[in-house]
Length: 142
Image (cartoon, rainbow, N blue to C red; front, side, top):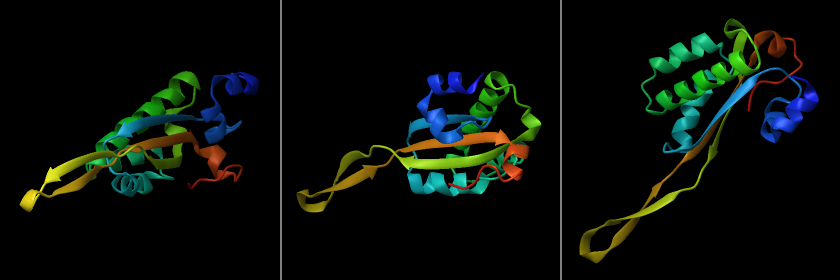
């Protein structure tokens, strides 16, 4: 796929990857608080894909299962649409943005009510070949 075809495909791809090879996956409106999801995402940022999947499989956090599925999806996107080798892939960017908050109320003593905030997250993972990342042409990080 040429660069001009990629630009026509997605503005989000352009903002995440630019002209570099790689793929991404996004899960939106995930019912996990962004703070808890960031703990898990920070753990896998910069890791090789197989190492990250192994770490997520045994992580005790509840958000690890969701991040595991997103990472598998990003790897599948890279291998099928971009024809990249799974062994060379690395998690280069991982981002957790805050989604809409669901407001609920809980009854309390003496006729009062307190607000319960059920937060949601938008989780984005980007995988790229490790040789692209290691030669200094792109930055890892957030």
